[in-house]
Length: 229
Ligand SMILES: [Zn+2]
Image (cartoon, helix red, strand yellow):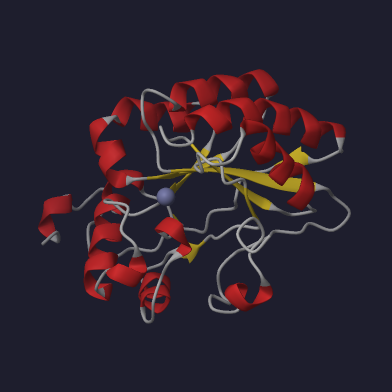
């Protein structure tokens, strides 16, 4: 319970983060995928989402985007949202804040999204503040499927979705090798169940970009190298 649905005490650690997005009079959910894109799993996810006519938000690891830019383009071409999950999947608790921010900005040069999800949900002061100052919106979650956990059966992962999803839930799956077995079973069944329950699927709303001093992707008149370290 404490893992699948973050408790109040955990949420207040990051009060400015997005945990759940309720829209009045509508039953919405927000599917999200962390850790990709990778060729072994992400194309399969994209095909399922297309078949079900569902859009999702992918929190990408920058290094995977560097390795598989065609997969990243495919995410965008098919109308999904993207967010930043750092370049090297760093854990905030174990990383100096400057390094954490630099690594996130490095990923941003490839991903170009204001949405940011910290790996494992871990951050220490002042990382959330630094991210906010740099124009990122921190997106946590309301339901963790725990698809990455090999001790859970695929059926248990599906049950987590059914048990914990509520209006406005941001739901986390993973397009990763670790999660592949559980996710491949649970995802299509979860979508089917959510539709039967009357949920519609939305993208996490992105914020307008602000220009950062780490690169000038937003300003095409200036070459990125002009201000990059
Ligand atoms: Zn992750």
